[in-house]
Each structure stands twice: as C-alpha cells, then as structure tokens.
Image (cartoon, rainbow, N blue to C red; front, side, top):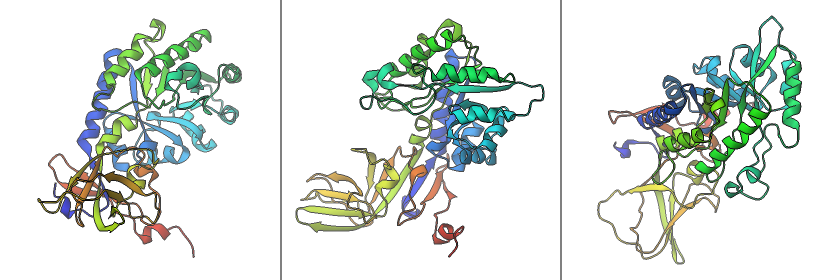
Length: 396
C-alpha cells in the first residue's frame, strides 16, 4: 500500500478484517446456540459500505433511531432483518417495523400507546421489551461510577417492568416474545455478562415469559491480545444459562467488536516548531477523528518516515491536530524518540468504532475513506466532503 498517493487525513477500511470478525463471532455463537443472530450496531460506524459488508455476511442491522431504520432499509436490509431499539423511534417507522416483522424492543411508555394504533386484522404482532440494567446492583465491580444505573428500559425493582408487561397483555393482538437486556460495562468483563444472564433469567422465569428470543446487546471486546475472545464470552454466558432457556434465539449486537479493527486513520505532519523546551508537531488530522470521546491515554499507532535515517529528539515532542483547540493534542514523545519532520506520516490502527460516526463538521469536513482490497489495491468508497456538500441543503 503506497500511502504517499493518499489524500490526508483519511480513513482506510480493511474489508477482510471485518468479514473475519463477523465470521468468528457467528461461529462462536453457533457452538452453543443453534438459533442465533449477530445484529451489527449501525451507530458504531454507519458507513454504507460497512453496512453492506454486514448484510452480505448475514448480520441483521441493529438501529436506534428512525434515521438509522431508514438507512438500513435504504442500503438493502429486509425489514425483518432489522432490530429496532432505543427511544428515538418515530411512530411511523415503529409501526412499519412491527407490521413488517422486524425485531422491535419496547422501552418507552409512548411506544406501548402507539401499539394501540396497529390495525387489527386477525394477526398477532410480536414485540420485545427492554429490561433496565443497573450495573451497580448487578455487578458493582464493573461499575463506571457509584449508582451506575440506566435510563433505558423498564426497571424490575421499581415495578415498571411488570406494569409494562400488564399493559402489553391487555392488547390482545400483541404478544411479547423477546427480552432486551443491553448494557455496556466499562470493563467489558466476562464476569459482567455472566451476572446479567443470571439476573435477567430469574426475571424471565418468575414472570413466566414464553420467549422466542433474548437480545443480550453488545459491548464486547473485539479480537485483541489478552482480552476475552468471542468464544469465551459465549461459553461463559451459556454456562450459567438455565436449561429452560437454551433453545431460545440468542441475539448479540456487537459494534466495536466487529468494526474497530477494520479501520486505520492516516495523518501527515504539516509543521514542526520549537517553543521553550518542547517541540510542537502539527498534523492535518485531529484527535476528534481517532478519539472522539477524548479519553484514551495512548493509541495503536505507527510512524512512516519520509527519510530512512533520522535523529533522536533533544526535546519532548507534542503531537497535535489541525484544529485551533489547545486540547487537540494526540500524544507526546519523550526525549530520545526519533524526530518527526514535515511530510512524515502517522498511522492509527483500530479506529473504526464511533470515530466516523462522531466526526464533527468543525474546521475540516468529513475526510475521504479508502478501501484496501484483498489484492492490496486502494479505491475511494467515500469522497471527502467539500464546502459544496456542507451547504447543499442550506439557504443563504
């Protein structure tokens, strides 16, 4: 791959990596669950080319808004292969999804009210219900902070879950056939998923729910050294699952685990200057594009130097992005590391999750995206946005 021919900054998609991630997760599920679905989390990276990869590999599209629902349909997902979650459903798409047998998980009171508007034509409409997962109660070792509860779904402890089930039972043409129990812990530990399964199955059994599916959600590690594998997650989940529920369709909603390792981000050094006892290295990329939550302390990265020979730096090097924000600083290199110079490149790996989805229209518009084919060729799958794209739907 000759990176000198690429326009920077840019994302580079490795299609084969994503295919392998999906395949490995599907195979891990199939060992223990004869009925299973991998629902790709569209919000994690909604690039149409990625969605097409997921669709071709047999994934469902897991969407959390009416925009994502329409996008999934537009790129070719059959409606019955869409998992519709989240509070940002529109009434129109909500009713449409249910009537076309999508997997729809109820999590707001207004959605229950909307069900009353379904046409009664002698058929039964199937829905799931989302259960609120309070990490601090279920697995305090995995909490991000004290009282790490959730604003999503219906709480069993407060009685809301049973009230919601009762209201749904009154609708004679609606049947609850699934439970959704997504919650992503900061630790992504196997322990957490075991405890969630133990917690949720007690509620399923005590409420005598007759389920066709259980949607555990996402939040898993991808293929990384010294992290749980897909097989370890699935094996541990199955090990604590009640025999009464082992024939249930099991659904997972991976996003990061599927797409993170499939993308790289390339930036170029555009300026180097010394100020006081530091060297400031400016690039044409930004931390916004590789760490949109600004919480990482380091990255999977490599340097591609224009010249083979280089000198060790006599000063710390602070590498920053193109924005005018002082905090747009990516990382620092200590004294003795090789000097970075204008026209050198920095390549970031494992940047496919929540980066492109959260890229802001700030100073620089959406960067170009290349596909690295299995033959090692590069082609453009998304053009760089220009000012023309930015103003296309604006009036002035």
